[in-house]
Image (tube, rainbow, N blue to C red; front, side, top):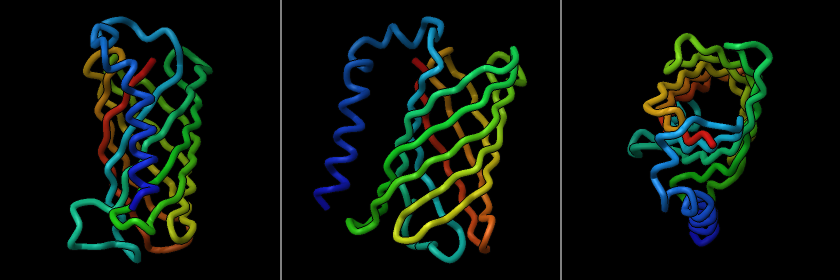
Length: 158
């Protein structure tokens, strides 16, 4: 129980310095660095139907623009389950396409390690509410089993 709380606290502290001044949400993003927090549900062999969610993912990532509207990206972070023994990590990389100034779609390959390894192919979308604040959603299917995932989250671009 202590380990997931420490991970969550450390992640919140990293955002604390930025959250003290909300004016940064109104300005343009200068860098390609971002932080995303997801609440996810695993549908399939690891599913816990009595839980509202199975995992919290708090990722830090970097995107590299290869064209005006196409970026390659990589993100990683801790994965914390609803039970104290369910902790691990996730790492993913993918391609993101900017459909409009406020809407991105993409695909990614994710490695999720919580109790057992899962490799997921995911489709994702981000709706930018401001240049630095986004609502995100991911849907993934496992490459090697019947496992599926659905996650919804918030992203901050710096």
